[in-house]
Image (cartoon, rainbow, N blue to C red; front, side, top):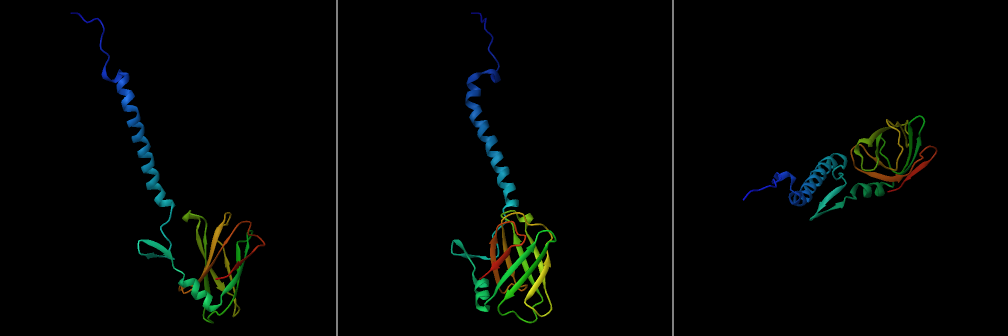
Amino acid sequence: MSQDAAIAPWYRQPWLWFILTPIIAAMVVGFIMLSVAINQQRIDPPLDREFVRDGRGYAVDESMAENARVLGLSGELRLDAETGQAILNMQGTLPDNLQTIELHVKVGANQQLDHVVKLQRISNLNQFNGSLSKPITARSTFIIMSPEEAWKILQVAQPPFNDKIIAFTP
């Protein structure tokens, strides 16, 4: 018995690759999905502080918005896109010793574009003035909050913001 045909090595067998190709493809896709999930953790911020644990889920904490309703707070925000100026006119019961208000600007889910602007009170009026550090070019959530986080009012607005009044009501 003589063998004339040489047997091909294992890595040249077609049935081996027919079986291994889906397994290798599934592992590659799995590692890609794992890296996306790990990197998504940096992009998608954790729950905000306005969410509270409620049983097995989360609920929105409305206590700060309710405090703003009790004080009768509302406001109008004007943004100047060229100079970066933010002027806030507040209505309602504000303490006389309140000298600053925080304006939180949240731009979508990208936490790197979010910023906080300290608005300074102009003399004894209910008017506050501040300067934006970054231009706002996307749909944003504007949150007006007291420095001690006793109350807040928020509003969502679309660009363009120049010559636009953003009205806040609790």
